[in-house]
Every structure is written in structure tokens, then in C-alpha cells.
Image 1 (cartoon, rainbow, N blue to C red):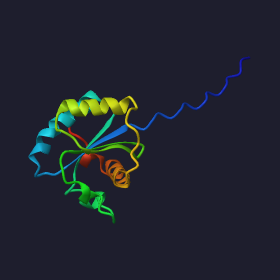
Image 2 (image 1 turned 90 degrees about the horizontal axis):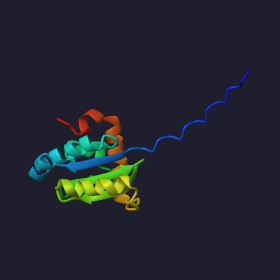
Image 3 (image 1 turned 30 degrees about the horizontal axis):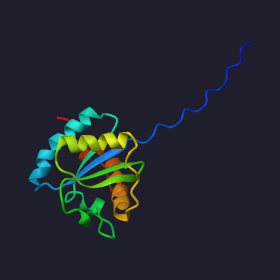
Image 4 (image 1 turned 180 degrees about the horizontal axis):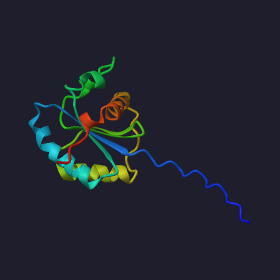
Length: 141
């Protein structure tokens, strides 16, 4: 009679990359960039994409040190994994720039950021994406 051995627990899958565009409703550049983000979301279904209006979600993004107030240029992109920011800054609003950045992230070529503002923003955006996914999800339509 053969004895079955318990299967070892599978290693947990790594946290997906969070790709968040921080924008403002009045920004016409952001309007155009929404389609770029939607196309990237379709091309990278394993990544989590979020579209966050910094004015609509100011309370969720801001902290006592004014993290949301630091966003003055658009589009501002945050790439984080497991709550750790790897990119936080303004991008040229072109698909090729975003695609190269995503390729670097997936290949493990973006080191973690030590910047305190980026870390606070990654925490806030991560909570927002988890708590209000329907409100911040990038529409693929």
C-alpha cells in the first residue's frame, strides 16, 4: 500500500505590479493618456492598473506630510510591488515610454525607491486600489 506524501505548499506567487496613473480631471494631457493606459492594461493582464484623480481622492492620498500636494505635473506614474515603490514621477505621455518602463519593471530592472514621499504615496495608492477597486480600475472600454 503506497503512502501519499503531502504536497509541499506552493511558493506564494509574487505580488502583481501596481501601475497607477495619478491625474486630474481638468488635465487634457491626462484625457489622452487614459487610452494609453487602457492599451497597456490590455497588453499586460497580469499587472494591476489604476487611474486615480488626485482631487477626487485627495483625502485618501494625502497625509500629514502633504504627499498628494507634491503632484504638480501630469501624468504622474507610480509603479509599486508589494507596497514598495519602484518608480514615481512624471512621464512623457507616449505609449512607447510607458511600455519601456513596464518592460523594465517586469524584468526586475527597477530598483526600490527609498524616497519617503514615494513610499507614502505607494502605501496610499495601494490602500485605495484595494479598498475602492471599482472606482480606480483602468477601464478597458
